[in-house]
Amino acid sequence: MKVWLFLGKGKVIRKNMERRWGMLGKKFFLIFTGILMVLAFGCATTRPDLPMDRSSAIPGDQVNLRGKPVKLLGTPISLGNSLPSVELVDATTTNPIDLSKERGSVLLISIVPSIDTRVCEEQTHYLGEKGDKLPGSIKRITISRDTPFAQKRFAKVAKLTNIQYLSDYKQGDFGRSTGFLVEGSMLLARSVVIVDKEGVVRYIQVVPEMSHLPDMEKAFEKAIELAK
Image (cartoon, rainbow, N blue to C red; front, side, top):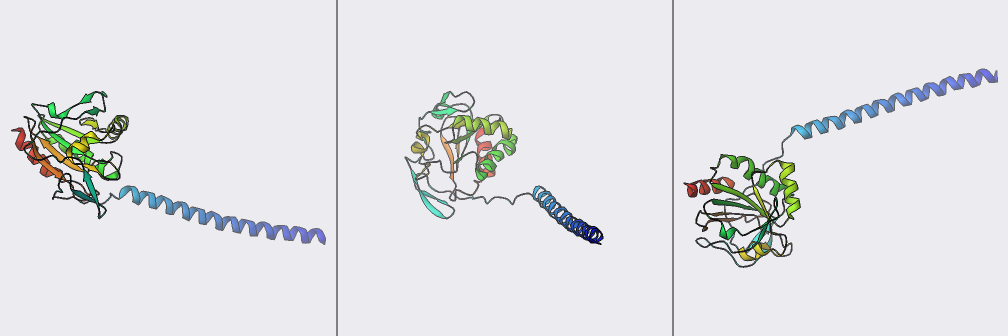
């Protein structure tokens, strides 16, 4: 009698365990399916376009960072003058580069705070990919305060090797000599500068809100005009 009761209870326990494991299995299946759906929709959905500014702040004045004003340090550059003579470091060769000595090409200079942030990455991709329509006499340049090694790594991973990457990582001399150095972070303000074949600054946009993109298409149009 005791054996029968034990066996009977054993069957009941086993059935209860099977039922519980079955319920757990269904729960795991539903959770796993849900995760797959989230991943699938997440990968299939493109991120919304980043905001773009058409206006410009003034070098050496101030810009906003998510609505909060920040001061720009240094001596502001202006239209009609040459770029200041400062030493930048080429990310590919680590050689010193002085853009004020460049002649014969239109320089389309994209200036970003840090190459690895979302907006800066988007700006650089735009320069590298959409900029393929530009004539060969226009030299595409990206300047940031990232180290040359970080810039080189980004170029390789992003497959954007048609841009010359220049680093202002040492003392921020380029930022100080243009009025693009952001107080506090000591990064460069998001900007676009175009220099003509004679080395004269012909276009400046300092993006008023640093979390927005510059008007790259307008810069492209100006660069093409100067390249003729």
